[in-house]
Image 1 (tube, rainbow, N blue to C red):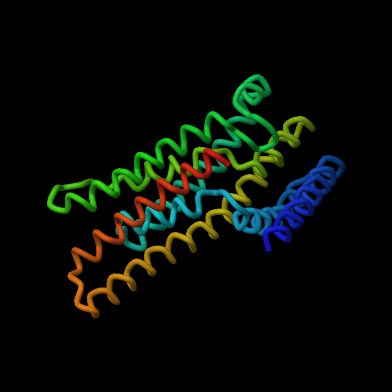
Image 2 (cartoon, rainbow, N blue to C red):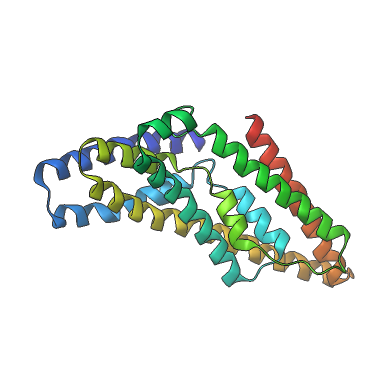
Length: 236
């Protein structure tokens, strides 16, 4: 499955390159509009590949016990940051890119910062689970921003190519379209995590486990999962 997704990504890059070339030759709003549905589809396919903070997002939503609407907000914050960082890096120019990126779509410094913040959030979950009587505020948007701090490699590829060819508007249109596709996939992940947590708590209560105890167990497990995934991604 992973190999198939990687192969699809290669086809996506080739197709995007062809679309940008077609826009460069013909131009016009109609050509640009025709590229949008493709961008949405490519964004969704791209979001299914490893990365994009899906596991961290699911862990946060499960651990923080957020409602469905809040889960959507966190997913939106992650998606917007993930795509927005790539647009910003491409816009700032090559000097910043060469200092922060280790390769095509890789950002070691930003990855380290992002994973470090997620480790702190995971530890925070475990502390919350151990101290249930204290008041804890929810920082869902911050968590979404932290998880999405790594720039989207496909968006960076599109933006860099479009800027190099003197048509940044095409890159921005594609980036906006991919944001919709990526956001849709991450929203599904967030809602699934929220639903799974709710069902897990229901099952626990039916088996005689107190809701507070079940909630703390899930939160502690989610915190441990977030820390483990973040550390693994730093080392990989």
